[in-house]
Image (cartoon, rainbow, N blue to C red; front, top):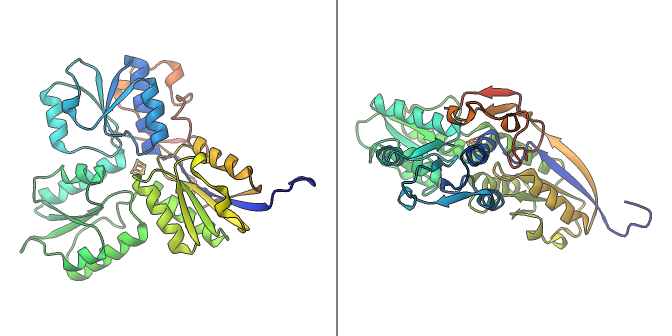
Length: 350
Ligand code: SF4
């Protein structure tokens, strides 16, 4: 604030980590690299990640988004599965049609798929904690035969659940749930079904857990209102808004970009928090900051709860003889748009 600055002061607590995760980064990079290597169009089944800005930017570069494979012609173009994962029937259909597929399913979603398969192979019925209709849930349920999985959406459903009689049970979950809500559902299931198998902690991914912990930290640090940059259909973004309010924020505002925010809503606040869902690029966070600065003299403070150094490899079909401009050291535009330093640890992706 300058001596002549008439804007009221506002402390902006920036959650860290926030924004793009390794799975989203990889998915976006797969689309960008496929376009760079094979030209346009490349087809993408479902929004590659739940963010309109990302989808529109990729569409402008030659990605064609479809909901089902029958919208794609048999013309040999690349077909990319989104980060949320797909049911086995989709993979089978693509194989039957000999489509050139590239799988952008996040490796942490694939891990849940394999976990569910393993329990099923060992004779267990699966209780999947997640939200009905979310593409990740559809994909996970679609790894197993019809009837092998029961969806449990909340504590109330866990309390009235009637699983198949005489069959051992195992639970797994969507990766982008509320950590606290999931723990509550698991507690009910474990109390009702002794012998229930499951992961050591939960299947919620590191990115979701870290972003929720960072939101709690900014609220504990004094944020009266928390702005979440993310899409209304982005599970992890909606969870961030819920976590903020449950942690004690007076209000959480979910906005897709700077223009969506009415800064006047923050009049009277001394401190507000800002975070972004795992599918929201840092450029949109910066838009929100610029928007806030039109009304307030901002003092920015980062509140960091974790360092993230995970990166997932691209599918081998895209990395063979990759031109230097597309290596991880010089990633394409959107993929580079992640908050924080580029990850240094590389995990196998597929
Ligand atoms: Fe993967 Fe988690 Fe990111 Fe989803 S939010 S893409 S599971 S890292």
